[in-house]
Each structure stands twice: as structure tokens, then as C-alpha cells.
Amino acid sequence: MNEELILVPEMQARRALRNHALRLHVLAPHGAWLGCGALRVLRLKINEDRSADIVAGYESYRPL
View 1: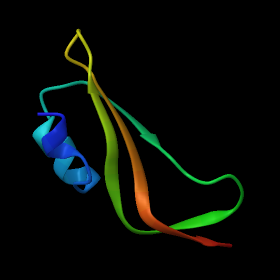
View 2 (view 1 turned 30 degrees about the vertical axis):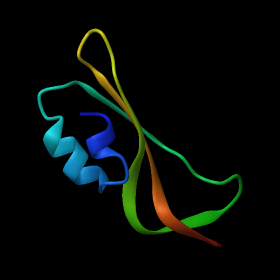
View 3 (view 1 turned 180 degrees about the horizontal axis):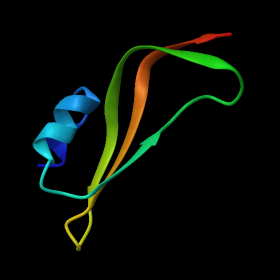
């Protein structure tokens, strides 16, 4: 299941993992940036307690 959800939109991944407790981390560059495009899953880890850790990032970033 993990590989199937990489790079999908974050909302689609949350729907697929609706039976899991989720922790969402958004990866962003250091400084003042604006995330552009879709928020996509970059890394997914299903834990032994059936919770899931999602690391997501935007398709691109623009400096503010």
C-alpha cells in the first residue's frame, strides 16, 4: 500500500487511510515561501499501531 500512495494528492491519501490515525508533516524550504500546486505525499509510513505518518510537499514553491 505504501508505494501506491507516493506522489498522490494528500487528500486522496487521507481518504485511502481513513481507518488509520494520521500524522501529517508538510515539508517546506527554509525561509518565506509560498507552496504552489497540489500538496502531494512524499513519504508514507504505516506504524505497528496502525497509525500512519505522512510527509507531504507542494509541487513547487515561490519566494515571498
